Amino acid sequence: MSYANFIPALWNEGINRDLQRHCVFVEDCNRTYEGSVKKLGESVTILGVGKPTIHKIAKNARGRLNDAEVVEDTSVIMYINQMDYFRYTVDDIDKRQAVEGLKGALEAETSEALACSVDTYVASFAVDESVTRLYGDAPVKVVADRNDATGVYVLDILDLAIQRLYENDVNDNAKIVVTVSPRFYTLFKRAYTVLDTDNSGELKNGKVGMYGNVIVKRSNSVHKTDNGTVDNMMIRTQRAIAFAQPETFTEAQRAKDSFADEVRGYILYDAKVVRPKEIININVKYA
Image 1 (cartoon, one colour):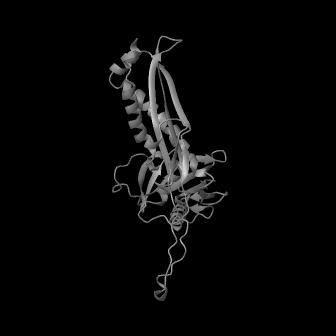
Image 2 (image 1 turned 90 degrees about the horizontal axis):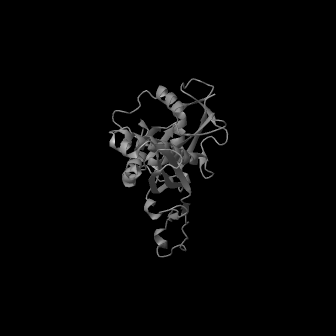
Image 3 (image 1 turned 180 degrees about the vertical axis):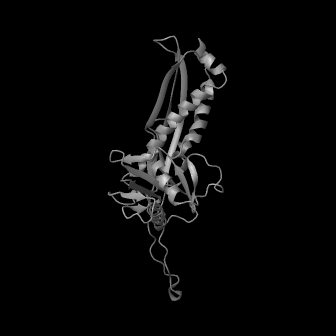
């Protein structure tokens, strides 16, 4: 039975490696707590506290302090409830694994499909109830020409989003990422002709350059509403959304209804907005 030679640990490693390379939204999540959960339904507490109040004290009043305040507890619980799986047949796993390139191709295609599914899920947090929409419930039309009075200039949109983040007390040293749709990126590139690509390091995981000190990424998984006419993009710090993927599992068996081998597997994961002040929904339309 050829599937007896299937090595799930190697397939898991290959899938996980490719997932890291293909995911755009997931790369900019807080994954600190990933090792704290192991299986579906488990939860992890993301610790957080509010900022204490800083008091001034007069020179002649030293020694007399205000009562101690109770610092706000901002901890949240994230449950692992998402499970994506794959299941397909191959004519003979031994042959597939022996022929150079075929095993890698199967892993790559599987990883790309999983990455798209996971990224789409994380991108949907742009419309989480805790996230502020840049233009409220009425998105604005984005234009690439500052003199076009029919909409809002694309760079003004980004500048306002960045401003709102900093107004929420995001630290100047925080790594900020904006992930835009291909359509928005086309307008952005047309308006921002000095896009930094040569000096922004390796362009991977959707990264297309820098806008000031903000990393610009492009993804086709950007969340859409209103029948696909509105892009709900994210600008955020890497602490805004927590993500965990505690398990990747694959196995092989003889297919019951055909002369083939079956490969199947799943990944467990979930995500949660844990710092809503450090994420802004950039909601725009194009007509």
